[in-house]
Amino acid sequence: MFKLHNVSRLQTLSRFGLGSLRSSPRRWFANSNGDISDKWPKWLQLMTRNSLKNPYDRARVMVMIGVTTAVYSGLYLFARSEVPITQRKQLDLVPCSVERKMALREGEKLLQQHHHLLLASNEGVVKKVKEVGMRLLAKNAQLLKDIPAPEEWKFHVMNEDGPTAVAFGSAGLCIVSTGLFYRIQTEDQLAAVLAHEIAHGIAHHACERVTEFGLYIPPLLLAGYCFHAAIAIPYLLLFGAMMPRARAMEHEADVMSLKLLHNAGYSPKSAADALLTLGSLGTNAHMSNFKRASLATHPTNIERRERVEAAIKTMFPHAS
Image (cartoon, rainbow, N blue to C red; front, side, top):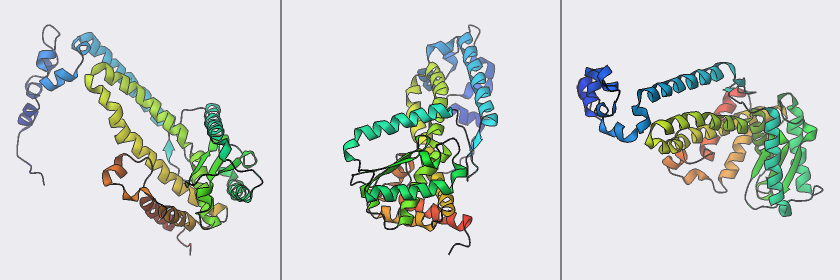
């Protein structure tokens, strides 16, 4: 445990070389010559670029900070939309037309790379995947905001041993591996996997991440202009912001899939069963706490299953 010592604010500031800030704030920021480098603590001098030692450059930086803050505040207050089912407020600035083109490009690229592994559309596996997927889409047509209608969707099955499923919601494309299909135990579990992927498209998670990444750029450029150590900021954002956001989106897709399953006549509990089945095939449950908290883009199947079971109790309290 950490011990709390009774020290004054001046003593605390002095430990970090900021004692002059407490005693004379104006002198700490600038002297009569406008040069503040000798008033800054050594560690801050080493981090700060020479450009900030000019008072006019410092004023320019303050204006840039003010404008960026105002723009971001406006976006946060007035430009957010609502995610269906969860009613979470999200910031998605990517136009639907651009989102569709991006999804089509990535989907076609994936199909071209693995075209030799795709099964024929008349195979029983493909027909089953399409049947379940179309049922989910048809029964949830009212939730398909800004993504293709059910009849426009295409379902493919790839002859791949690894249990994989991916959907490009804005392009109306879903790909499932045979490794996943043959390991899933029931039709309801297959529906749970497809519902999760479709939920990502309904929530426009891909564009939300693109928007968030774009919003990181101005602060990074500003930090790079001010500090030598700004090179570490992208890595801090990666571990401290982007990875947790990706995992939060996975949890949201899990919750949304429960509603999609229920509307299509499937059991919401199949989502938890599917996670249990996939977990037995080899999951990331063996990862250390640090990796699970920092490095993984997906939560562990154990964590996801626990949250799904809790969500089922909340959303469907009378489910048997």
